[in-house]
Image 1 (tube, one colour):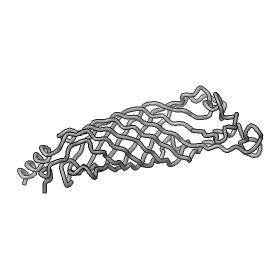
Image 2 (cartoon, helix red, strand yellow; image 1 turned 90 degrees about the horizontal axis):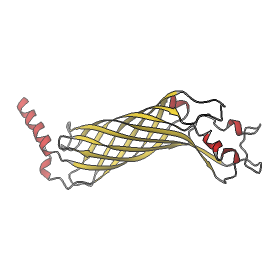
Image 3 (cartoon, one colour; image 1 turned 180 degrees about the horizontal axis):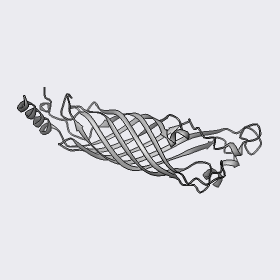
Image 4 (cartoon, rainbow, N blue to C red; image 1 turned 30 degrees about the horizontal axis):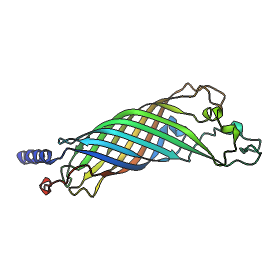
Length: 238
């Protein structure tokens, strides 16, 4: 049995292909730690470029863009009137959209383990990375009639924060032999060690010098574009 397993493992390694993989992904994140006091659940989209070796190691770069309307901090409280409304330059209720923006960019490396998978190029995928995280509160003045949030004032309200981050991913990666159906899905996490970029927060009137730990935990599903040749059928094994 031991000899058979070793032979099967050797066959799996020899049949695995080396190929560049370009992916696009979508998902959602739950903010934790310091980030949970500023934002709620969000959505995200991004890209992933990886190179897979014949030994099923993967190396690449991942870019992610998060967005959502669930902003918990009332950053405009000091520019609202006595009734709690934000007004435009003419004194009418303003039409403003407040949302979250998150950017992560990481270099990562991982390992593919074809445990019980239909071919040696698919299986359990474990990955870790290191890179950059940035997030802020985003304003959209629909009619561009709100002087209270324009120019330098906007910069004092957006809570722009950035720093280094780590990432982890555990999931499943599938590469078909005909290139028509290729995907990956799993759980991802980001831990950002960040700090405010702004010297003063206008909503509090105080400087923000706190060292933050911003955590995102979420689900991701991605589609892989075929950048490799069709794999021969003898790559499959029983």
